[in-house]
Amino acid sequence: MTVTVYVPGDAAAVACDADAVARAIEAALAARGEDFVIIRNGSRGLHWLEPLVEVVTDTGRIAYGPVAVEDVADLFACGFLAGADHRLRVGRPEDHPFLAGQTRLTFARCGVIDPASLDAYRAHGGGRGLEKALTMTAADRIETVKNSGLRGLGGAGFPVGVKWETVARTEGPRKYVVCNADEGDSGTFADRMLMEGDPFCLIEGMAICGLTVGATQGYIYVRSEYPHAIAAMARAIEAARAGRWLGADLLSSGLAFDIELRVGAGAYVCGEETALLESIEGRRGQVRAKPPLPAHKGLFGMPTVINNVLSLAAVPFIFAEGPKSFRDFGVGRSRGTMPIQLAGNVKHGGLYETPFGLTLGELILIAGGTASGRPVRAVQVGGPLGAYFPPRLFDTPFDYEAFMAAGGLIGHGGITVFDDSVDMARMARFAFEFCAIESCGKCTPCRIGAVRGVETMDRLIAGDRPAEQRALIADLSETMKFGSLCALGGFTPFPVMSAITHFPEDFGADHPAAAAE
Image: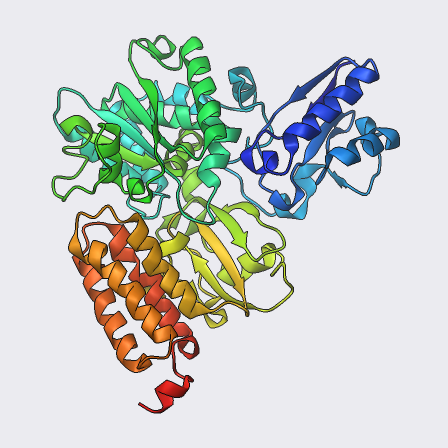
């Protein structure tokens, strides 16, 4: 009987020495004379348990974690190949409360399958969406996406079906599909997890999009800091071509669609869609003025769909199960599920896919509270340009409109937790500093405003006329918000002003210099 062991090859697990663990397990199995296979799967998203090793037993897959190299001998001695009890035994992964409470539509296969195997993908339901899409007209495909209620999961929340429809109706000699995989927000890792753990899902979603809008070429723009994701996607694209999922005659349909990987150099601004297009075209990543919109004049001047990884990866489920199966989840205008990334000062960091509607407080409980054991003081939602929420707003539901009403943004679904030791004035300063470093330099409000913001925050922190500095920061934030060409400068005021609004005591209200004003 062949022994099958799963050891994650996901970057998070590899950072925790998963490669060495895999080698140690391989050596132990070889020494025992076992017939074995070790599958380097993706992560299931329980990052505090990485590397999460799973062994196939008569009763299913049994997980152990976090496994270190020095634990391997003890695991074999206790009989882990049969799922025996051990201090690291997690049990059936799907029974773990962190996974059992999720609704995994997009991430259903992550951590479950061999990400390099197209056969494994198909065996777990992959491909049904593409096969269904090929039986439909382009108009019916667009209606399917529109009826699902899918909105862009990269932050803007724009209806995906409307974007596809615009490109489909725009005339052009060529059309393109661009996947924005330039995941640069702190505390976010869902794109990377999907590409490393279920890359065929992204390929399938892009193929459906291409066939729908009339595009024959797709590009995945991924940052160079993601070498594991780049390698996983490159393998999957080659396997998809060999399986005729990509190419001149996709699944014998007579339709053509192919995908090319493009690797960015790590500029944060290239997460903005027009700067990304500039980079793909071989130029410096700078924001374009809009209009024209990329849907009308995008890559190489042609009509272009730009969606992020999570938006495109949600498409196969919608087509396989029908739009209602997706739309039935969520609240209000926020339909379906959102892969939420729990990070920062938390006990149980990881990916939690759930329907829109859970509150911030519920998500903090799911994350187990702070790793430090101290009270939660603030939660930043949406990456380094997201607003800070105090405990009194933890009843805010996780949906686009509720967050906008509370002065925040969902962004890419990243949640970063801070305990009561955090200095919010320095966090606000960091937002300005981050913008100053990452600005493409094209527009004055962002390029100059962020630098002036750092200088003003330094004076405020030093106690130099805090009330005057706060007024100047508010005025500067207003200029950046409405005068910047893109969201980098336009969203920087969110963390700055939310920190000042909700945590005024950190901005000079109690400083001796402030009392004298």
